[in-house]
Every structure is written in C-alpha cells, then in structure tokens.
Amino acid sequence: MAFWKKFGDFLTGKSAKDDKPKKTIVVVARDSNVPNQKRVDQMMDLSAILSEDSIALDVEADSKEKVLKYLANFAKKNDENVDVEAVYGKLLIRENEASTVLGEGIVMPHVQDESLTSLKMFVLKLHQPIIWDDQESTDVVLGLLGPDPEKDYENIPYMSTIARLLLRKDFIVTLKSASTKEKIFKLFKNS
Image (cartoon, rainbow, N blue to C red; front, side):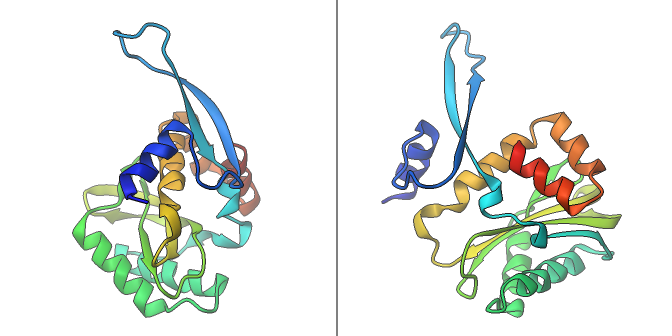
C-alpha cells in the first residue's frame, strides 16, 4: 500500500491492523468555515515501543555526535542484534540531511536499519544541555529506531503522537522535570 494511503488511513482512523493499541482524543478544529467541527485523532500507545529499559537519565555527552553514538550503543544494550556502527552512521547521515530539532530543548533523531528487529523508542535526558544545530539548549532526546524495511510505515503514527504530545506545554514541563525512568515511562504511557 502506498505511503500516502497509509498516512491518510491513519489520519482518518482506518487501520489495516486494528490490534495495535490506540487512544482516541477529540480535537476541536479551529476552522471558521465549519463551525463546531470535530475531528477524531488516533493516539498511539507509546508504551508499545517504550520501556523503562529504553530510558536513560543523566547522559554525559557534550556534542550531538556523542549523543548519537550513545543512542546507538544504548540500542545495542536493548537488542544484541543492533549494528552500532550502521545505526550511528545512519543517525549522522539523517542529521546531516535535515535537523531533528523539535524545539523546547527536544530533538527526535530517527532512522531505520536492517539490524533493528522492531520499532523502539528511546528517551535520553542529558546531564548538561548541549548545542544541537540551531537549538542552543538541547537536553531531551527522543529517539525512534526501527527495522528496514519497515512494515506498513509503522513509525509515522508514533511520530505523530509524539509531535501532538509536544504541542502541550504541560507535557513538556512534566517531561523536563521528571527525575526517574518510572515517571518518564508513565508520562508517555498515560498521555
């Protein structure tokens, strides 16, 4: 199935696989042409790709490259099949092609590699903020690493869910103040 068809199905709530955990939220559109229009968006359950074992606190790194290297090595700790050098290289290439800065001190590097067996989310909270491209103070890294080839573009709904969560100021404040893996995991699971 074509990418845009899958993406459209996701946005309209259709799914080839209805067994994936989803949350539903109602978003009131601000379209003056359609008064009281409501749109139902599917929110993915991020606990399906995130665990407390894939969260790291007080990560010591003083550059973007060191953070990406840490992320690749951290993925290896979670899955022994991960080819660290391949993942690290792809992360560097991805960052060179386009920045993954999301704002508010948060970045979301993401790649696919043959050595990855499933889509996995990683959360890294840095010990000290670093400069990441044009963002002066980056202290939270949300990594998405998935298999290549990827089945049914499964990363798109998760990226969309993360982006929508980061539109909420209260979510960002809670994420940045969370001091334990358990609190961070619960924040993503319950949001």
